[in-house]
Length: 320
Image 1 (tube, rainbow, N blue to C red):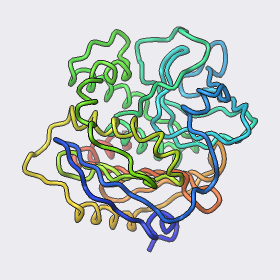
Image 2 (cartoon, rainbow, N blue to C red; image 1 turned 30 degrees about the vertical axis):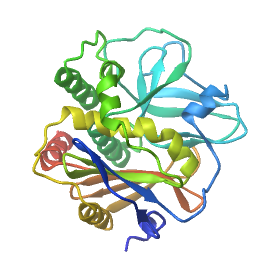
Image 3 (cartoon, one colour; image 1 turned 90 degrees about the vertical axis):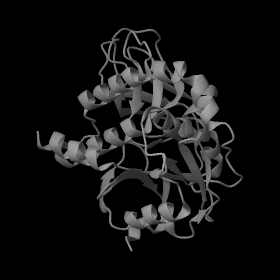
Image 4 (cartoon, rainbow, N blue to C red; image 1 turned 180 degrees about the horizontal axis):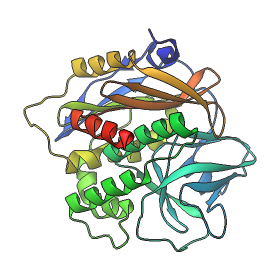
């Protein structure tokens, strides 16, 4: 047993699988307490306690400045999109911003065709990066940490996959913005996620796309997970709408358990986080993941299944 994974898997309870079209979800719960108390990005911005801006007047594509004015830490989840300023970005790693402080955070651009200010501060876009792009970003960030000690992504790869998402959905986006796809496909996403509800005490989920496990996410706080649940599910739903699959494949609890079993084979690396705690990276055959460990518990962890063709492509990109 991989000891660092014990807080994630010890006592893990899986609920009943529910499917709708190509999307399937299994609710996940843990018996432990809520852990450290924090606000989500959306909460903190709504309360006027968090400000996110460009790092300077000129700006820097892979960095943003975060100011937490509140008395509680704020959770920025890997893949959450920030809209405004010079161009839209997503957070490159899950970060717990300490109370009453400023931090510079690593981000990736999700709007290639714009570099001019539309606002001084960013807003919560209400979007989590589409799962397959998020998985690729997660893997490239892990590689950059190992090679350079920096939480940077393969920005070119992110832009390429967003361009493919725009093309696959037939959405017109003047600036190549991922957010335009989520907005234009809002009705389709609403239809697909309708009926998927967050259960009381639920702290995570295992997702299926076209009958195969796509990811596993878990949080220390059921309250925070409940707030993040809608946009997190839509991240997976976007892939379910745009990626073709084999209709003969069927989601099952056995497949979920098999995926969880693969996590024990993950290679693990630990790195200081930009905020509280440690950034933990996981990798095994067909699996990539990351998490934020603080005070002996994972505030958030996410694991993504990688199709074989995507694994091959990533290895080629890394060699180049």
